[in-house]
Amino acid sequence: MYKKYHTLNKELFILNRANFIKHLKANSIAIFNSNDEHPMNGDAHHNFKQNSDLFYLSGVDQEDSVLVIYPDCVLEEFREALFIKRTNDAMVTWNGYKLNMDQAREVSGINNIYWADEFEVKMRPIINYASNIYLSLNENDRSTISTPYKDLRFAQLMRDKYPLHEFERATPILHRLRCIKSNYELELMKIAVSISEKMFARILKFVKPGVCEYEIEAEVIHEYLSNRASGHSFSPIVASGANSCILHYVDNNKQCKDGDILLLDSGADYANYASDMTRTIPVNGVYTPRQKQVYNAVLRTLREAKKLLKPGVLLMEYQAQVGEITQKELVDLGLLTMDDIKKQDPKWPAYKRYFMHGTSHFLGIDVHDVGMRYEPMKPGMTFSCEPGIYIKEEGIGVRIENEILITENGCVDLMEHIPIEADHIEELMKK
Image (cartoon, rainbow, N blue to C red; front, side, top):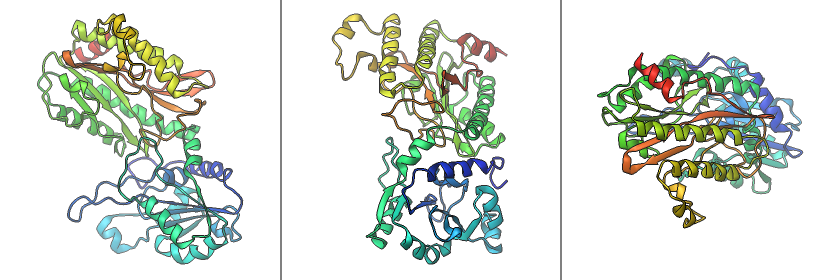
């Protein structure tokens, strides 16, 4: 064990590489880099988060790592090779342990391990033998990165050094592979879900009028770290009262007041796999009649939305169907009229005034994971399901979110066992 989480089964990464290799052209080399260590201020760095593709293919969870996959290489030692940060006694004294060569073999299932500072000398003649070079970039369609990150800099460097090679995109291959979860991955995701379950049980005992959102956030991270999570899978949203109507509220600095509703959207990062759950609870332990009315409308929408998640469904069509379900609930809540619906702009339906975000996103190594959103859903895909209704004029925002696995026969709710009924939540908070 070299991280907080338990040592993972290397068969996961052996399987992932084998699946990836099937999609390469003949005589191709693929090269993957770890992420940068991002500077903070002075000589400090932000916590390191591994490149998702490198982790998916190797299991290596540290900086200054390079993975090489070259199935047709004439030299066996470079058909699969891993370059890791050189470690020594001085490094251990200052910064703690890094993988040694034997540990890297055990983590990744790769026999050929070298030091990262040997990459240029060892790989230049090998790359020259290859006809095609596969590289990966951050092609997540939700990404808005504006900085020249490691993969982008490396791609530009390789084009300068090897201008006559054919370059190929590894990312589309990995998007299709990563969105279908193996049993190994599902087990890790279920561990992350179980940590979220424990966190919610803790929060139900803690929340009461007078506590502050940041105190709740502290309880969340306490439960995550106590259960070997690396931390949050995204910045937690702890939104009380009117803050519950701010979709990505992360200030978490207000006091929770009697009569407020509290929207908690949070996830644990376990072994680089993310959980993502949202619950909306009454601060004083009892929903007002209006809060419960809105809550139950969202819960009904969640249950109807889950029925639509099955093989062959297109994400965009599914979203439109969930919109129609929400539209009916909004009419019943007195928030929309049939006249509003008749006069609506088809490009921005009337329901979007109260439900303006998507219902589902891919979930896996990243909380907003990669996937082929314009292709039909397939068994093995995992999605969030998170309908919501946000009534700014009433200061009531309700979102409920579970994780869903697509199967041959429909879907399985991986969080179905976590309290979700309004009456059940009230009962647990009274205890």
